[in-house]
Length: 92
Image (cartoon, rainbow, N blue to C red; front, side, top):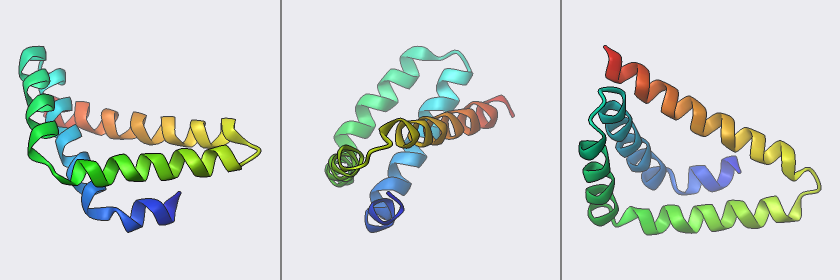
């Protein structure tokens, strides 16, 4: 998984930045703004196609592993960390 994320580091970085912006809006209670940012990000970043491929690659890697639950837990923790940071950023 680490290699896949590193291979797509630009897309991952852009997606992370977009997540922080969206999370900031959500944390401030501006749901409509967050949804607008999400839509804009999906249209703006061509790298999202690269991220989609990275997701497919990760899903294939997960499929090949016996311990799928552990991999899902790691991904959940990663998303939780990103969202948590986004929420904390929005509160400051």
